[in-house]
Image (cartoon, one colour):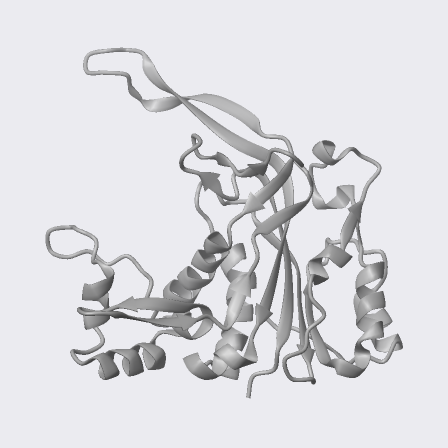
Length: 299
């Protein structure tokens, strides 16, 4: 039996691009009205999927598979990897593919499709402060043309620093339909943290997970909601001048307050904190003092 849970995940990135927009020169995504950095939930789910598949060897439905001609396999052909009959395909995908059990999927078939709503849903990730895009110019490794001496020039866009927060919910009702297990949820939590830490590409190196909180509820179909909004950063510097995790304190006073108000509905709170993150209070100590059971996540 899966309990309803809320997830808060904070990570940061330095001198890089957490999630480029392909239709805007691959610039980091910015809310132009607020100056807040945006990272899509699709990016986080990709991080999780890649870790589950590449590091843990778990089968996932949504992955790039190429045929002998080098063309990417489409959804209908991918579905046929799991059987010929509709019933067999659905049963085998749910049994074998952890990403479908977690995030759901629309499975295209020859004559129709089957849709599973994902038990695990994330909002868009948003930075907890305003950011400013920096443009970096450099030279490429190759000449601009054959028999030419001049090298090509490249241009890229980065953020000097961004502390990004994701908020998610695990829906116990949808978990019944996809047959989500407690072990799946355990692997999800591991993949959020370690997947982010091990995402070592040129544009993602420098990402560090800072805080992961999972609030588990006793009461069926109940959750507080919007927990990420109860956390904010405090700094002597202007938002755009923040350059590393030592430049601010994460204020969690409102987070503690709202959990205290709902403690009778909370089973426990699971937490993983990077030692370099400074918070307004000791999160473990204060939650225990108000009578909430706290467990350290071992990842």
